[in-house]
Image (cartoon, rainbow, N blue to C red):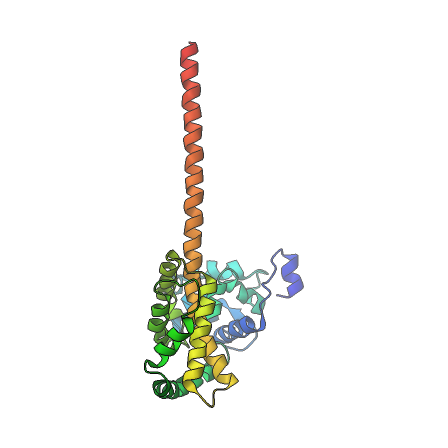
Length: 278
């Protein structure tokens, strides 16, 4: 399917940035068995069978990938096969992610394995040097840096200290912890946390790691640990969005309820007047 063809058919492919394109291409290549540049229904089915996590990544119900459910998978396939060619090119394959950009955000990038190695190799150095320069090591350095950040958010500092280990362990598979950390973000939002708070506290933790590491800290360390902390803060932000949406929905529901009550009262009043007039 050409880009002009998709436009003619009324479907405009998403404009992915280079990072997202690389992530989609990696999954696309995983499904494109014969390296023809397109993915057939059969290739997609085999890929889903071989990689049980692929259903979640592509947003396909697990039932559709089960033997005997070819019709369900065919429906899913047809929904993105815009030109009806029975093959998905890269643009069509990208439609799996059109409304699920959140998933792309947390898929490992092309250089994430290198970043993970840097993080792993630097942990011991950070731990040892931080112990030498501060009696409370990294937690102490972090608390020193957030001391003057206002407003404070109850539980945010403790949450970061508790969750950074999970962010490191799941650096290459952050989807494993999105749900739990998103829930943490929701709780923090209920205590007044905003996205700006996460930026400030995240920067403070990153600075603590840099000081803890000491001499030899490089731009590569900054990028790797920045990505790790960024993943965690993004998950918290999703919880804030959930909380804000719930607040908006509750306000809207209250408005609708008030309108309904007002309409009911007016109807009752009109009915009473009509009864009096009889």
